Structures are given as C-alpha cells and as structure tokens.
Image (cartoon, one colour):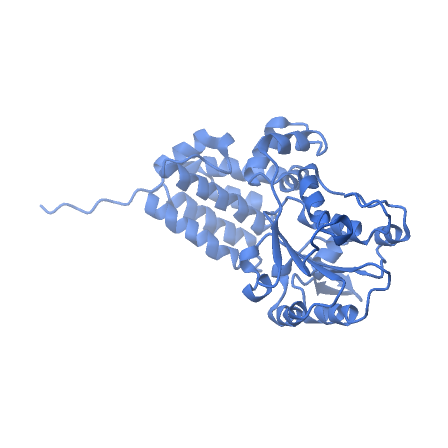
Length: 357
C-alpha cells in the first residue's frame, strides 16, 4: 500500500515507463526524504506495480496476476530485497532493531549493516536474465547502512548495470550515502504531507484519538506522520511525557530520581527527545519559534531565559557526541545521571569574579 501523500509521486514515476509513452526509468532510483514518510512502503508498492503483469497500467497492482501473487507471498523470482539483519527480524516480528536474537541457544547480535555477503548474492542474482518477460527490481534499504566493502561491491554493479533491472535504493540519511553511489542514481525526494493532511490521517486512519497528542507528536516528528504514529503506539509514550516534564523543570529537576525512573528506557530515544528540546531552547534564545515542542512553549521560554547561551551551545554539541556511543553497555543510570546533571548545570549562573579592593 501507499499513503495518500504519495499517490501523485507514484503516478509520475510509473508514467515514465516506455509502455505508457514515457521516456523510461533510470537503472537506479534513490528514494530520499525524512524518516517516517513511508519511503520503504512506497518502494515496495512501486516494485509490485512494475512487476505486475496486468495490462492495466494504472498505479495500482492488480493483485491477482501470477506476479502479484508471488510478490505478496514473498517469492517473486525477479524481486530481491536487501536490508540489514535487524530489519529482517523486525519485519518478521521476531525482534526489535538493535536487539539480540537466539540462535542455537546462543545470543546473536543482529547486524544493522548491509554486508558484502548480501551484495555478492545480489550480484550473482542480477547476472542471470529476468525469469519473466518483464523486468527485475532490486530493493535495497537503507542504502546508508552499506558497510564500506558492500558499498564498493555495489558500486561496480551500478557502474555497469544489467539490462531490464531497476535498483530502488532508500534512505532518510542521504548525507551518509557514498558520493560515488549517489552520482550513479537518480534521486527522488518523497514529499511530506501538509500539517492538516497529516493530522487528519493520524486521527482517522492512524487511530490516534487524542488530537492534541497527535499534534504534539507530529511536531516532534518534524511533520512525519508515520514516525508520530509509532510514537503514539509505542511503549515509551509514558516515559516521553515524564522526561519532557523533567526537562521543563530546568534547575528544579530531580536528576537522581529521574535517572532512576528512566534507566529502562532506550538511550537513543532519550537523546532524541533531549536533542529536540535543546534545539528549541536555542531557537527561542535566537528569537525564533520552537520547532519540535510548540505545545511546551511556556516552559521552553522559561528555560531559555534561565539558561546560559554559551553553555547551551556546548550542551547541544555534547549531545551530538553522545549519539556515537548511545548503545554503549555502560550502566544506563550512570549515563542518565551525567546527562541530567549537565542539563541542570545550564541554569547555574557563573560566579562573578571578585572585585579588587
């Protein structure tokens, strides 16, 4: 399926097929856009539409031809999906990204990279002509998850693409894609819905009954409705409310109690919320409006006035550095205590130097 804000883009892409009178599709199409817009779902639907053997060339796969039946069962001979192990497990409902799986009684860490072994299998598959009369589609995401050997191996195939093959690459971090791969793809940036459309979708199809919560989560997600929907249905919603409530207190937060209460919440999510909060504080200090938490503007304004600007800039930079070790096995409580203490220090005014007598 695709989402309502993607329908026009899908029609435009499919209209480029030669059989519809278009000029043809590129050999590699890189789908970009912010996280939470449904890029992988769009790519999946596009792949099925391109492989559909119905003579109806609309944007919707027929769902009944042999190709559509194979695609829905996950065994179309001319479709190959390449993604990290962690996403395979998540899609199969076995584990969440970044967590461990059991294999032969032992704990196995799920890889978040696309490895060279996966790309070698891809290369072996594309040297054989498509099994059906149509084309072959390779869906690879996120392309920024390719490790260096895998990226170099894929690059050789993109430089000499096999005939009747389309590579669909997906990323929400285009700045992390190797320039050599980027230069060999045609980039298509998927649009985000307008705020009214996104809120309407969240409260109807998404089923978020609380309109105020839907608006708050949509702002936090930067206007990405699927990211907002995941947050609304996630286990961390209560933790999010508690954490923001602590940040609102500024110098009055209970850093020891908050660290104790939040130690079971994944550190990446805590850093997400804190980085957005720090961004809004800096925006208010620069006489701009809060981007991520406008519903918390009153508390943000109080904190922005009380915080020292140089210290806040340093804190925001330190948060970026923390992202590099966000999954470090160091005790969560210790990390949280340090983070909260650093935040509280933002509101401590530096002592004035003693005046000479």
